[in-house]
Length: 326
Ligand code: UDP
Ligand code: GLC
Ligand code: MN
Image (cartoon, rainbow, N blue to C red):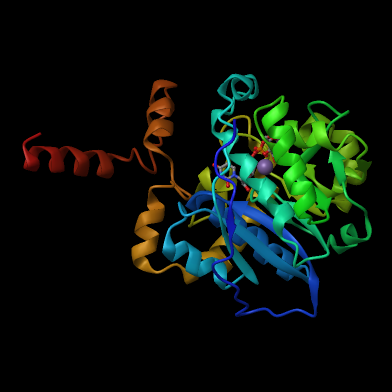
């Protein structure tokens, strides 16, 4: 069962960037402010690698108006779409990502028929070299999934917008569903004759340690980095003083790419965020440790003596509690 089907174009803007080739675009999706911040960094990274294509983002009404305003500064088109959700908790639990039913919203990208060809990119990706040659490939071109290489990973795919394909995909969603509960299971059911392209167009960041020799040999060619998995770049801690990400155990290999992501965020995204919006974003733990992470760290016996758990902070906390009588 899926919910929501209509698509509504509420705005068509091009403020900062107007490019010649209007018929082709990179398309991404954000249904909340965290992924919208990811999309802003992705958009800037594509611009700084001199893409000649349009940038288009699909958003749902759950993205705050203030963040939407920032998106207009980077994307040529900001398109409002309804949420499509697989509602398939059984399959999603196999993936251990209950939140990904909402990725069915990606399917709206086939309705963008003002473009002759597009490349979909997940909002948790980063461009490190110009990937425009992707547009010379047919629908559906993608990279193998590292979990099951017979499947493609749906974080990046070349597609041709078509109302007909959109309708067929919705029919398959209704009739067969998705074997992972998200868009990837559905798209792999529909596009069985997909074209495989080099891993450098959707290099899952963890590949740097899963196959280090190959990374040493080919990593230099990477064009698009994918921060696949439950912890996204905007959820890591960032130390303003040292200008680097404090990667938790198990994430050290991602440090160079996380630092590149944060460098773009600090330089190009953060300065545009008004104070009021910055306060809203604090709830995303952008660059800060969440309360849950802090508690888990205490429980592991790893207090952050020089930072959050410094004597001065603990003293201030106790004082505030004494004052409020709690
Ligand atoms: N997405 C979103 N809101 C969500 C979950 C996902 O907008 O709550 C979009 C976003 O573009 C994201 C993509 O769907 O990059 C796929 O989800 P994610 O990247 O988290 O999946 P993963 O690549 O980690 O499997
Ligand atoms: C994958 C893809 C992601 C997709 C998700 C759900 O891991 O990276 O793009 O949304 O599975 O199918
Ligand atoms: Mn992703």
